[in-house]
Image (cartoon, rainbow, N blue to C red):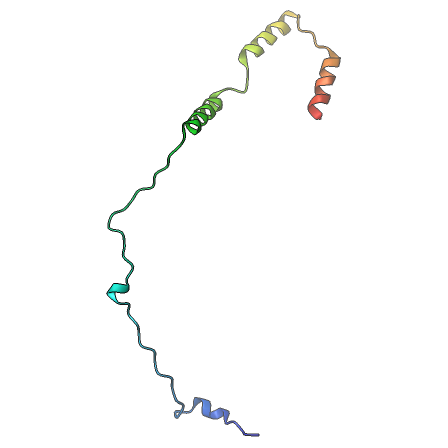
Length: 97
């Protein structure tokens, strides 16, 4: 078996690999940049415009139907509002399903 001198690794006689030369691309190899900037465009269909308009309109609506609230308030104040317990129970069960 051949012996290996590990101390020779850091010796001054150690040969060094030659440095690689920097390679510069040729002008003809360069990627050409566009001369004018283009702008992005979006086209939206008429149906999409209508849906957007309806969504905006719905967002502006109140969750409270004020006319209904006012009419119920009048019935309660006048003592004419009667609640059927069976109707309430049925509505609760229906909502839970």
